[in-house]
Amino acid sequence: MHNYKELNVWKRGIKLTTEIYKISQIFPNEERFGLTSQMRRSAVSVPSNVAEGAGRRTDGEFVNFLGIAHGSICELETQLYVAFELGYIEEQKFNDVTSELTEIQKMLYSLIQKFEKK
Image 1: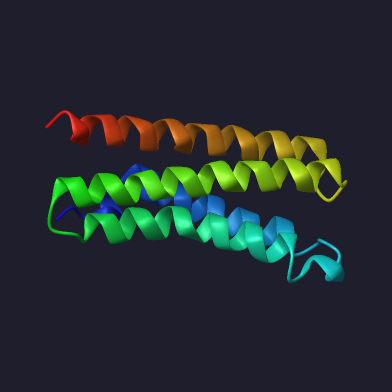
Image 2: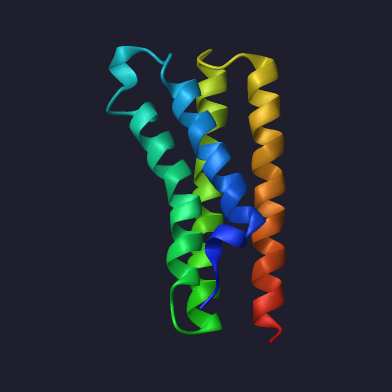
């Protein structure tokens, strides 16, 4: 078992999730059950899967959940591109968020590699 609250990837995932919630608040009402909902679920899935995996019994299970978190962050990245192309996100905010997202992707990948080598 790992203490997920000490993992930087979990902490940054929480911050990213709160940022996605703030960004999506200004999306059009017709996106409430579409892009807004999808982005929020993808974002919250990242730290949630890190936490769930950390609470499992084996490193293999942890790696599996880290892989799910990595998939969710890739999904979120795609949704951010769609929101940007639709004009829902300003360019500077888009760049800032995708930059942080890329760093979290790298952190997840590194953590997966670390535990797969054990």
